[in-house]
Structure formats: structure tokens, C-alpha cells
Length: 191
Image 1 (tube, rainbow, N blue to C red):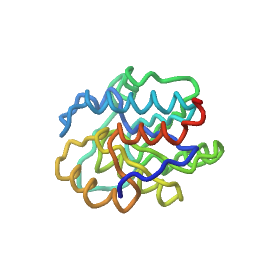
Image 2 (image 1 turned 180 degrees about the vertical axis):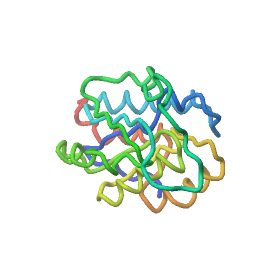
Image 3 (image 1 turned 90 degrees about the vertical axis):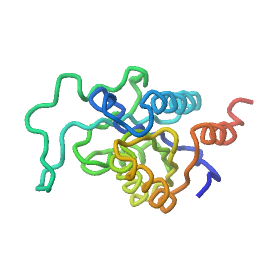
Image 4 (image 1 turned 60 degrees about the horizontal axis):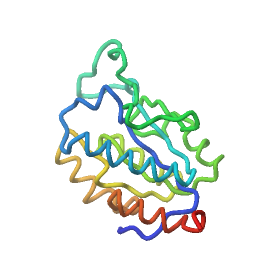
């Protein structure tokens, strides 16, 4: 669904833009994704709206067919990319599952701030971003996805999420379209 509106109290969720993932082979340039994420962060900060920085540190327990990395993650692996400009009032969520809501206090933190909508960007489109969007939708938040501010290592997963999953979870658009809509939504603040 194309962008139609942003709720007055929307939060930006940036998923897994961290040192350990930034060097991975990805469908789209990580530099472009980070630049667009930073553009979104700047716009949300301008309007004093909540910023959520999510990193992943490990995996959920349970058996899978795929082998899992054994042992500790390398030093600095979970560090947020410095370009994001983490601030003391940012909400920081460390997850061990694909989505940022499962097994964290993110929903409570957003609700305590009056948030009714989330804008999501980051890595990986078909896992961290999609799972976070699904969980936000299931929790009753309006969901918007910044399609040009996300990427995945798997082209088919990236394309499938964008074409088939995201339109069922909320509205989608470019970073610039989201920023333009945010500016229109909060135009009265600047007058």
C-alpha cells in the first residue's frame, strides 16, 4: 500500500545496522542503506520523535536444520554503526531473535511514549526487518517500511518480502517519501 499518512507519534526502528553485519555481502550497498537510515534518523530527531536502535547478539534457542555459529561473537560485533549517531535518549534494544519485539520490552517502551505507528528500516529485509514488522503489526501498531533503506544477503528473500509480505503489513515507500510525509504531518510545529 502506498504511503497515505503517518501518525503524530510515530517511532523509527532501525534494525541491525551494526558492525558485525555491515561487512556482509548484501543485495544493495550498505553505504546507501546507512545513508538513508541516517536521513530518516535526522528527520525523526528534528521532530523529537522516538528513535529505536536494534542490534542482534546471538540467536534464539532451539533446533534448526542450519548450523549455528558456536562461541562468542567477535569483539565489537554488536556495536551500532557510528554513522547512526546514537544519542542518550534513543531506545536501544538488543535481541536474540529475528524480530525486535519478541523477548524484549520494546512494545512497552513505545506504548509508554504514546507511539501508534512505526517506520522500519535496516537489515535483513527477509528476517530482522520482516519479523519486526510482523510483530509490530500483530501488536497493533501501524507499520510503514522504508523500502530503499533496507537490504538482505538473499535477493529472493528481499524481493519476496517487498512484493508479497510488506503490502499486507502496512504502507511502503521511499525514504524521501516518508520524510516528506513526516514534514507535512508535523508542519504546524515549524510554523
